[in-house]
Structures are given as C-alpha cells and as structure tokens.
Length: 175
Image (cartoon, rainbow, N blue to C red; front, side, top):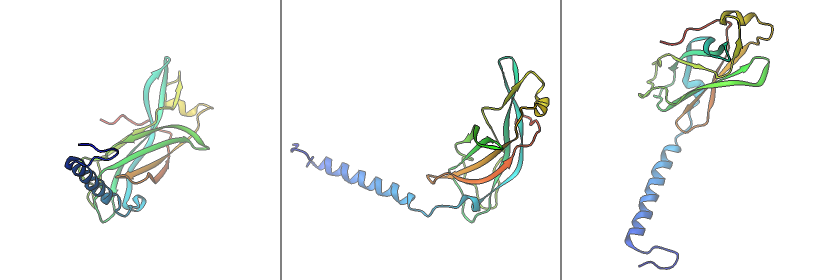
C-alpha cells in the first residue's frame, strides 16, 4: 500500500538501497587523484602537414593534419584515454580551423613505457584553390597553422599535452 509522498513497501526501500550503493560505487572511482597527463604521456613520432581532402565546388582542398604516437612515461597504466587536436591559424589564435578527435586511444590500457599505435587527426577546414594542392602553400593568402593536442583520462578535464606548428608539406593519407 502506498502512503502519501513516500513508498513504504519493501520494494521501495530495496530500490533506494540499490541506488545508494550504485551512487557510492560510481563516486568512489571519481575520487581517485587526477593524473597530470602532460607529465604522464609523451607525444612522439610527430609529423605535421596538410592532407588533400575531397574537392569543394570543383576546387582542390587541403586541410591541416598531425600524425603522432603517445608514450606512457608515467608509472601507472592509462585506460580510457581520449585525444583531441585543435587546429588554428598561427597568428590568429581565435581562428579555429576545426579539430580531430579520437574517443578511445586503445581498447587495451597503455602500459607504462609503451607507445600507442600511430594516429592521424585532421581539421575540417583548410584551403581551397584551382591550383594543385602542393602549390597552395605559395599563395599570397596562405597562412601558417598550429595544432594544440589535448588528452583526457577517464572523466578528468581536458589537458593540453603538446603544441606544434603545421609544416608546409603534403602528407599521405594513413593506410
């Protein structure tokens, strides 16, 4: 029988206890000390440049990209690691050209001392033109770009782990 405002049945109490235990168990993992990813991971094997993208409006298109590996230089394994690369015009820090995102770097934890596989991240926006992609670097309106690499461990906030200038070179699409 229900009474006004509260469920006094055994099932109601059981549901409350189950929810309380679940909340406490979930919160326990969140209380672990945060990891300083700038100290725990090293960005290695970095190559930056531009990749050709699908032509737009009959014009060739290139977009900034970065290829990299992550090495766990910390003492503990890293699981549930996410990666985000934000591309911007070098002399205009607010001119965002897009980002590349990887939800989970690896299905297995990244063990201390181990490196990840190579990842390539690219922006959505870049440069378009009638000229061949390799000639776009010489156009008077071409501006150099940079990329900031951010990592996220579990539910922690995003942390900046590296920054690079994008080289004026064409990169091959990963195979």
